[in-house]
Length: 374
Image (cartoon, rainbow, N blue to C red; front, top):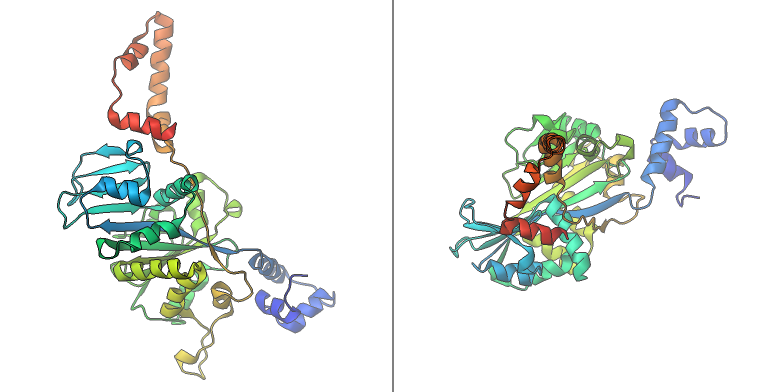
């Protein structure tokens, strides 16, 4: 018993109720295509097919005291932050712990920026676990500062475990005019590798990608095949990936602030995300007998926005800071040479490599990394 009527499951499968009942009763044999539809329908009914992550956070504080922001907002002790005096745009330098970055300026016009990209958000969630708090509490701390804090950008990522989002289907609907939207344009790519002029961290591995809205505007959506990213980056087979597709809401300035207020007020990730999605777009089925605005919402889109599925929750995917990128560099660029040098030392009875290591002082930045990782 899966908790829905035969007629509802037939609709979910995209098969007529009569044909589905005949298949279930053995009166007619299901084609391969029909079996695939039924199996996909069961996938769509799995528990928690969607979950949401905070995937990008950029907040500007109207203070030049980066230490205050780090210790009172992020609640990280300064001794665990590495420091780099390198001018970045209008900023004099940065403090960082892995992928958690804080840019600072001596000019109050620019103040202090906290920037957390994807890995930075996952690392922050790992720190939240140690602090016994969450995104809601961090955002509340920022909101209480009122005019002293400006939300520059928030990305809400709706992750699709079950394949509710079909990129080919969505692209076709947009191309055929069956996406009713407030956005003025959409752009589709068969591969993220062809994205030009767009600031994408993983563009080379995003698979099919659909943009709704201008990437320069304060609101736009990016929908892409997340499983291809995992295949490209981690070698994970497509059928083994947890997340098949991702729908990212990219919100800047006032829209970012409004989304944060919604999250903190209602603590309802589904409400916060789909308030935006449903306001800006709807996928429908063409009906020549009716005006475009009266076209019926498509079955596939109804599934995504809430029909037959459990409520979406704000999830946490904590990943502690690691030195994987540096270790990968050591492995690919240094290890073979180092191994050869050690072999030469061993054969010749010398200790040149060890003397080189002993003769080098560890700079403050790397001592901080040592403390962060141990």
